[in-house]
Length: 330
Image (cartoon, rainbow, N blue to C red; front, side, top):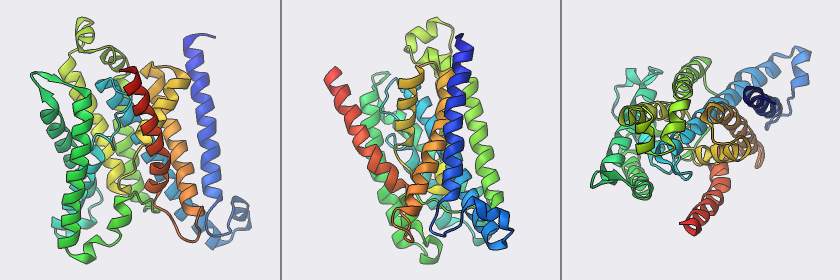
């Protein structure tokens, strides 16, 4: 089988899994309403399935795809499989930007659907600039220092968020605790269009740089010898990855480890070519977060878990295994 046919076959398999995950996620929930009830023409069944479950499942798909592709890009640029938006502190920075917007924006601006994503993007990008600035030593950026700095920034961002939530207007911060743990809610269709558009732009930008990511993964010197403007390419990738991370965090809060688990699993199955890895990570991430959200909705029904709790329970041990393996190899 040729390389292009192999890539298409792999993408088709992952897409079929994602389609099955979508059908399953829409079919289950606290209410005993299934897809077969659509045929009855009952308005309440249509409302639950279409406006509540489908909107929420599609949001999970967008966020899962965004975080997975962002993780894939960070791992290539940093040449470290432990990098993901959550561990680097980018998700925390985006959440801090969103919380500052909620605390400080005039009441009329809070209804502006793009306001929170823009604030989250500024927070994510500011965190990255601080991160690279602090981790750079003697003209070089060590990835271990970068990861440790990201952990510290995460803790700092969490403290500042808690300050705003504690000192701010309680009416503005209703539901913030769930938001900080990654809360998936059914969005208005207009908001869903906004997050889908932002994620699509970011994923497309990273997909267009797939060949460059392959070269950057070889190392800065090797990429430069092969004609890549390393600094410009790195910042282009980092900004695009921050855009989609911010879009995800602005609407759902902090959901960790998706950007770690999915690219790693897809790399094991499909190899390290980013022309394959980016599309399969996008589709695989969508499938994983749709299933995680279904678990969050049904495990303790009628009580819902934040989906970030589900991903953290799976992702935390996964991260430790990767970390121990990397330490043994060092």
